[in-house]
Amino acid sequence: MIVLLTDFGVADPYVGQVHLRLAEAAPAARVVDLFHGLPSFAVQASAYLVDVYCQRLPPRAVVMAVVDPGVGGRRQAIAWRAGGRFYVGPDNGLFEMVARREGVESCQALAVPERAAPSFHGRDVFAPAAAALAQGLRLEARDVPLTRFADWPDEWARVLLIDHYGNAVTGLKASPRRCEIEVAGRRLTRARTFSDRPRGEPFFYENANGLIEIAAYEASAADILGLRLADPLRVVD
Image 1 (cartoon, rainbow, N blue to C red):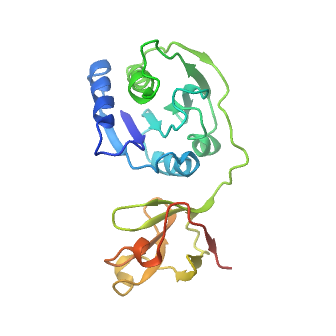
Image 2 (cartoon, rainbow, N blue to C red; image 1 turned 120 degrees about the vertical axis):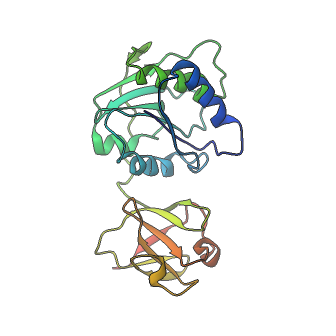
């Protein structure tokens, strides 16, 4: 299984071009489009989301994750292994939270083919590597350490993602002791699920991935509260 997480979106041709390369290189592999709405250019925010969404994957999955504003620059293209899975993508911090949780068993820098487009390593570098790993093939690569970002917190009190419902996913875990938060000048209390609150009233809840998520029943919490990506929040003691 090859699992894709990117900031490519679905309105442009990038995901389709990656699929074509994977179909050519590994026609028998099952390719899952897990998420193509990671926040654009936001490597740190995406690192927390990549970790959360990868936790339920089967142990032999090959994860290709791409949020890569430095594509074609000095950052390395890597394939690394942890918890029985392979991860392929840029060495720019995108995998920091996965590595912090799982550890790092091995890491290799990928060779960049001469004909690779400098602006599209997703298609020309990461997809061929993911296809090879899914088929049990060896990579043309050299051992390197995974670049680490030790100053990033284990949790991040920011809005990481706003979905099409207007729900705001945060980088905070939904501990049972966290019963009230403050965001955008408003204090919000915790609910179990959407219909537990009146229509249009903002609240927060533990989402399906264990994170604090801000929502409103049958309404956009982002519109009601004026939320934007990277807005801060705090837990009220």
